[in-house]
Length: 249
Image 1 (tube, rainbow, N blue to C red):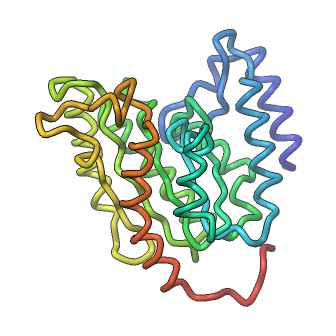
Image 2 (cartoon, rainbow, N blue to C red):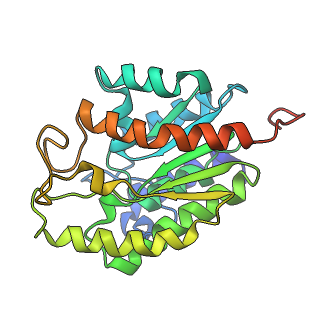
């Protein structure tokens, strides 16, 4: 079935029977708004990414939710350009995305034409209300789909960032447990796991407002911490990646 036909079918189902498209974390699902209709901003971003993916020069794709999208906010773009600009990076982050939404985006073409050397994946924090194993299964499935779509691309899987201002926040323990499981996906070659959560924390374990103002999203300083941690990994992976003789199919 062509992508347009699949999308039309999903629109009909979402409007008439919204309960049927509510999926588990490891099952692709389109994003719905509070009225059970297709989320228009989600679709607009998705179609923009399909256009962006036509650029054969893209070296890195950042895939995720609002934390990834935040690289494009205000002066954060200075860091983006400084640390990643030479790789012709593409930002495929959408605010509010859960693992099932990223799976839908992958299934509907976002990685079909792009051929990056590296994908940087950060996803899962919006699934935080789910059981721990459900979150893990969702992130694992996204990782698998990236690898299936882009078998020659290296994947840098980010550990889910800490959230909640205080170390006693129950989400902290849940995230640590998920990240311990995700670390096992690191094979030292095609998949690299990078957990930098501790770098955001104060000595007492709290999340400083100058790094995460709302105990979830990053400030300029937070993105600088992420960029400085990621840059050497990207340089290593990019330098070791074999050049391809063929462009996108």
